[in-house]
Amino acid sequence: MKKIGLSLFTAMSLSSICYAGGKLEPVSQPAIIVPAETKENTVSGFYAGIGASVASTRESELNFFDIENGQDRTGDIALIAGYDINEYIAVEGRYQFSVAEENIIDKTSWGIFAKPQYPVTEDFRVYGLLGFGGFDVSGRNHVGRTIAADDTGFQWGLGASYQVYENLSVFIDYLKVATDIASTAFVSDNAEIDSDAFTVGVLYRF
Image 1 (tube, one colour):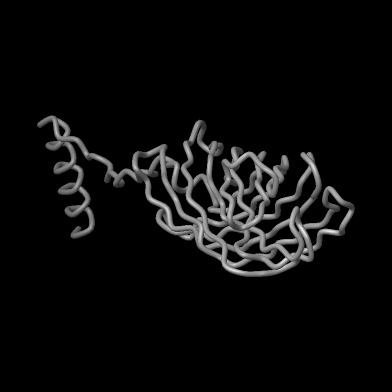
Image 2: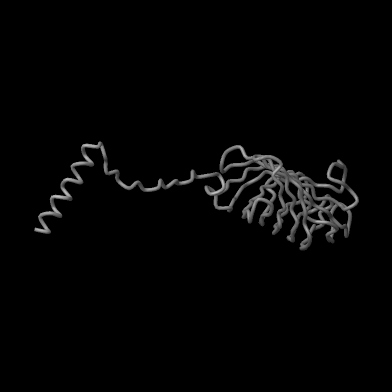
């Protein structure tokens, strides 16, 4: 009898809920929001690039813009690879070699740099290059004497870049490659020589 009474009570309770317009609502689950993918997490920090340089190698008492004996300009290719540690600092390696000779030399250089950088806007940044590298030059001067210089030392530079697409940017910079490097000859015998370059190029971030 107790079981029959309990069943009748349950049935009447459910019936009264239905007549009263009661509804049994399912338990709702909280929505899971997936954050939209942003620029910061679509690139890894690694980048690579290529540039075209106008380079000057000259006797140390001259400057980049002097047009006189004791200076030779070359057209160079610069190969670049680096990693953005964060928004303000990167590490970068460069290898540069001459492909167009003006008069008497061809040359190669390399460098490993710390690259402090500052984002002026979301797309435009300025940066410095501070590092260590090597420099090698060879050729013959106007009287047929062999030119040879090979040394390593401090290198520095300044530049700016502009992001034109999400992964692609263009840059322009100046790099001081060598200072007061002893040479068997340049235009003068036993000359000390400097070398620097202005480079324009593109960088791709992976």
